[in-house]
Amino acid sequence: MTNERPGAGSVRCAGGAEASRIAFLMQRDGAAATLNWVRRTLAIYRRAVLNRRHFAHISEYRVKFITSYLGFRRWPAANGGYGRRCAAPPRSSV
Image 1 (cartoon, helix red, strand yellow):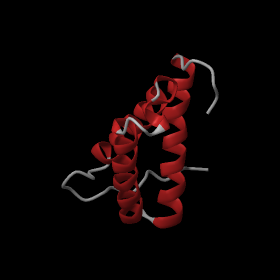
Image 2 (cartoon, one colour; image 1 turned 180 degrees about the vertical axis):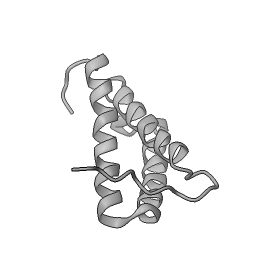
Image 3 (cartoon, one colour; image 1 turned 120 degrees about the horizontal axis):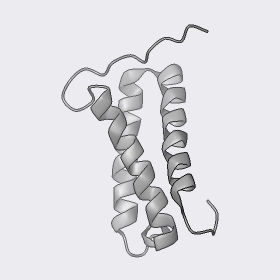
């Protein structure tokens, strides 16, 4: 993270970074373990942003944490992680 004010470019980049992390975990650990990791990370990020003593509460980092949180939040919703079975990632043709 840098000390510059977050803009649209850094927000888009954060969402892509989380997707990359999730894709890596899916390949390495499988869907169930990835879902557990995403859920734990969501809880950690939420607590950090709400904690006034945590650096994630500072405005320059808050946007980045919230953007990452939303990126993580979209993944279980898109992959059946909220009450349904988690879907396997699509296979690449490469």
